[in-house]
Image 1 (cartoon, rainbow, N blue to C red):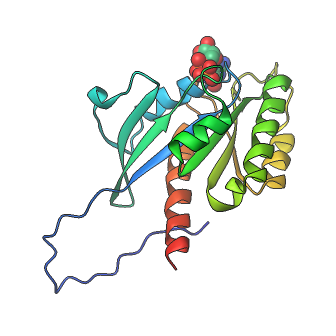
Image 2 (cartoon, rainbow, N blue to C red; image 1 turned 60 degrees about the horizontal axis):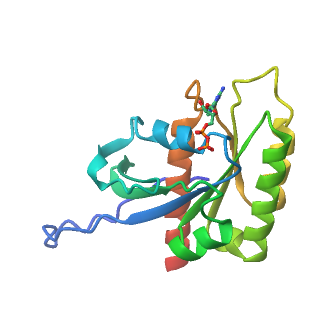
Length: 195
Ligand code: GDP
């Protein structure tokens, strides 16, 4: 997306004023068992992670991490509620997230259908146009059992103007790329919204 950050170097002024680290909420959505918890656990081991204070963890599947990307720090809160405990509608209304990660498993047609329904809802609510939504096809390591092609995943994401990535939290494939991608998209949108 060409989203390289550049600094307006106003170094002549007093730069000692401490800047607040921006905090972004990211909600994970998708059928149970697709690997949402596993993905968030992998984020915690990312090379981009600055600090992770486990004491900040909420018992309700919320994890707060500080990410250092392009020499800028951002705090990210990953919210991962089991779908039986909290509906998509409720999650969005409660957290007003900056981004949503909609996960399905490439070995489960049912989870793909659920992802489609979630995206339809986010689309209806105008959320996909106003915020960052990333569609994730997880478990890409299970090649023989795959029943959703990369093309199908891309098409779904594209039809709802979302970004798309296939991952495997099992073999750590594209997990850092997802983490960085989410943060870059949020920053990009924030810059655009300020204009
Ligand atoms: P959640 O219910 O969406 O949070 O799913 P979990 O993170 O609990 O994962 C459900 C199961 O899928 C667990 O047994 C994980 O070990 C497994 N799993 C998660 N991600 C992957 C992956 O990328 N590849 C494989 N092979 N298994 C995975």
